[in-house]
Image (cartoon, rainbow, N blue to C red; front, top):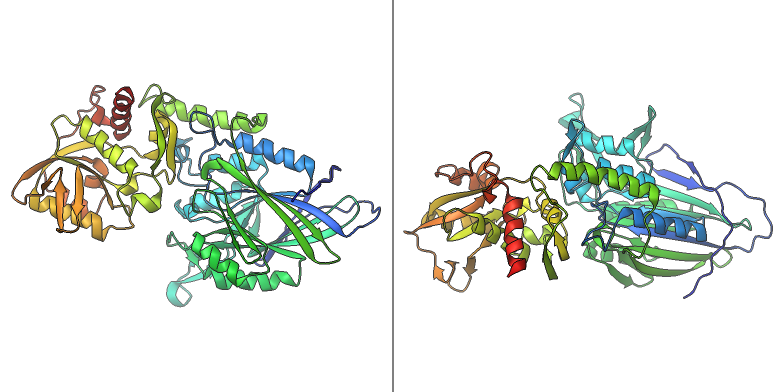
Amino acid sequence: MQISFSRLMLGLSLLLLFSCKVSQKTTPKTTLSKDDGVIEFTFLQLNDVYEIAPLEGGKVGGMARVATLYKQLKKENPNTFFVLAGDFLNPSLVGSMRHEGKRVKGRQMVEIMNACGVDLVVYGNHEFDVKEQELQERMNESDFDWLGTNVLQVKKDSTVVGGKYLVPFQKEKNGIKEVIPETFTWQIQDADGTTLKIGILGASIDKNNPVYVVFQDYKAEATKAYLELQNKTDLVIGLTHLEINQDLALAAQLPNVPLLMGGHEHHHLQYKVGNVSITKADANAKSAYVHWFKFDKKTGKHQLDSKLVEITDQIADDPTVKALVDKWTGILNDKLATVYPTPNEVIFESNKPLDGRDVSVRTQPTNLGKLFTAGFAAAAKKKVDLAIMNGGSIRLDDQLVGKIQAIDIFRTMPFGGQVWEMDIKGTTLANILQIGLNDQYGKGGYLQTHNVRLDRENKTWMIGEKALNPNQTYHVAINDYLYTGSRSIGQILQKLAVDKPSKGDLSDHRRDVRVAVIEYMKQLKKS
């Protein structure tokens, strides 16, 4: 349906209510003309954004382009609200680097989001990848509001039973502490004086469990939030970071919430459960959802028009945001140049997405994992029988497609490391492969491999075309983290001799796992 837009600009002011229950944003009163009881408003939705700069050779994404879209929407209707449905502090290559004495850990994202004008976020699972103090610093730096409907902070106190208690998270701004609310209220008014209160509830996935956070039941807490909001507001909207099956269940439980703006899946989705729409945009701002609402206060009915907008090089950069993106990109490129001199070089082109999503690399062999381990094998000084790496070293939580640059490989493995070689007896190798399959399924220790597969029918591991021989010794290439950082597999590998690259030998591609993969992909591109 086509919805018209008011062109009269209204200023927005922020009013924060410091309680664990509700926060709100409101517009100032205007001189009333004739209140027609109908009001229009817009939501701009992003989710799962880790990269501030455009991707795929500059063709897609880019927060400076999103800022331009937001300004356009705001010009059409000043009652436009910008939300991000979780996952932005981690993972990212910029976030993993050290700057001004400490890890960036999402500082660049908060700075960019502030400049873009983001209004409200909900916690995603990757917000809890960072340490408690790092998360606190990011919240304190943010100009936008946070929504913690089912998320509580664990506080240690030896004087209470159990030695700890639960409280809402807080952020501190200019010496004033603000409680992260369970609900949010957006109060708007249009040019003819029609007012509206829009309640927003949240829900965050119980996916990442550091010791400093507890997730309450998302359906129970979202339902409680809805019941609190329905008598205080004219309309209730959801902002979630859940798996799609959880969003579907929540939509079925809250049939009067017309829209759940969600995240987590990393590819755009749109579902309908009864009268409830569920939308998710593509990760890393490759697309955004725009939701146009028209609400009739006399009837209590609304119209909703949602559109997925692709963020491409056809959208101009906002100059202010681009300057900040360029600042962080410049810092990053200076650091990358010490490892690889041409980080923006196109090294490969793939028409098929290379899967580096967490849910994939920790549960099944992926084409990206096979490509990376093949790169380890190609970098080895001695011909290897197989190569292995822990899937958790792939930190992209996204897919690579199209023109792939060297920097994309750094993005995928931000913590680097080296390629090491070793000889492993068949019985030991079988044990390692079985641990990586069973004990580490769904975890960071799940193994991605080259020249290895499991013959499930015969219950045997195949090295190339031959069944693994327990009495044979195999030459294996690994990433050094398997040796130094993996508990279960590392304990086994540390008993074996290792062939490492010599320090300072720039001709040895094993010196950095990213270099090994980049050089291998460049050779594939030529062939």
